[in-house]
Image (spheres, rainbow, N blue to C red):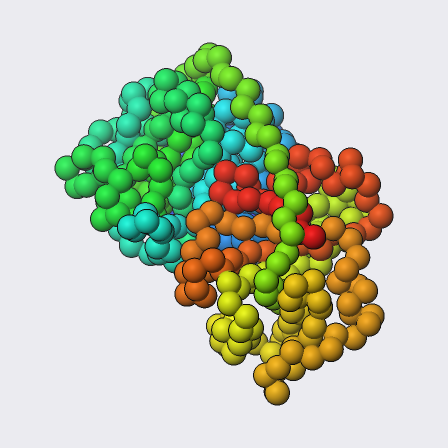
Length: 418
């Protein structure tokens, strides 16, 4: 019997290709290395796809956002509809969620958000996690292509954005009904728990991985490819392909995510920080946005709104502002000012800069929870501000596909800042 062939997909910034190919090979399958821009004729005879871990496009915008909108994902989506298996580990999972292939296909229905643990009345940001966890299947053994094993698997995790979350509570109910919550964090005996010692990234309902309704698309955050402990995961994949198992036929509900973009009047003290060197994230987000609005022009700022009136709380902190490569615009009660870093005081803003800042549409994205504001005082806020120009009308700016470039509505909010 011919060995199953798995295309190991590499986007710019991925870094888990070697161990992924090794895991595929050791499971008795044939890996085919495929760069995102290779000739797709190379994929003609593959049996499945493996989206690997790493930091595709340096996580610009947010993890998986750019790669998830690449035309290659449209192709892989059509392949999944034809019954081919698609698995994504870590960054691969983020890409699958952002592409809409997970969990139900189509719309953006979930987020792999920044790691955050509930703590008292607020949340604690864990930052990047690199540690070992236990994972167990929480669906039937034959439910998806990689779930035909039992017990608790000891695996590493390495991510800063791995918290499965959604604001659509009906979606969670449907995933449970469809048996799509395929893998969960657990202790070494297999007991599932949201305790931070068990689920260290704060993932809702201790979700470590999900599958699509048909069972042939799977997204998980842990890394079974990085350890011999993960062999059963890949053996299950091989057996699924060799058995010729047909994907399940389960009706799903269309979950369209409404985009409520309210206006928020800027008040108090606001700080907008821009890079004075080339901002690669800004340019990349602009390039993705131009898929939906070809004439769009974008400027990106880091945003702070302070409950007090002292800008030095931000601008004296080198971890928040570096005057050697950044400059700041201050807006206080509607008045625009610059910042003189050497004198540590607000200054008059050049007329040209003030005019440039005031043009276009300001979108403010704030992640939920806003853990970045914790140290700045109660009532303070942080976020990312996109200044969008390019002679776009209101209809062009309200496209849902364009708006989801700027934010994932299941992990953040988007407001028009006036």
